[in-house]
Length: 329
Image (cartoon, rainbow, N blue to C red; front, side, top):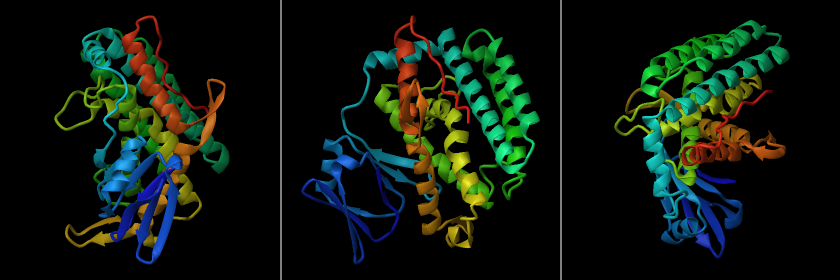
């Protein structure tokens, strides 16, 4: 469970083993054992005691920008993994291991998009089967790629990009937008950006707990201030978590004018307090959804952590295999 601070008058305090959130005359209390993360979506106040209790209980505090991107976090000093994991991560970049992980992550993204399209076709009488099948077939091109990541990166991006273009073209038939554009200010892209931002935070947390360096990826190159390993690991979960959440919001006609407001400083449409509350709740509901994973009912949030740990274990032990997560709806 999360505590979400989404109001400029919010204050997070501590009372015994409980967090106390005050917002004007309203007050809510949360048992520390029920909380795994604190999201700060608006300027809010904290007590030092509350922050210390969060850190003592390994609860990270994530600060989001107005667009939903994590801009910082307060995380316990006890991190997962060891220096050896990060050393092996660096070595893998120059070996075929890094390419192997990248191939499986890209393939999982394409397959998860395809299976999501098939599920949409069943429930909404939209025939997306042909596109979904074409994208599934395109993953065979990934299987035959060989060599180090530097030799196959462009080809992987090309295969992934074509599949993504087909995928979002299908989504334009059920959502009010012209296609995916992270710089666009239409309602769908604003919601996608914010939702993906929340997912970035969850993926970064999984990287840290698994002992991986969030800033050293394989497919997404090491660029200044870019969490490239986070970008590698997040891809396959975008359609499962965020895209599904946003499609549901629109289909259920929950997205209204009160979702958005104009930022007077920059003169652009942004999410309102109500909009942030709805998209955060929708994405978190998906993250906490449990599905069958290796014979057990497991939340998508825990599957993300399992995948990050799977990468780390594969890098440490050549005898282990890494399998990316594919969800068949």
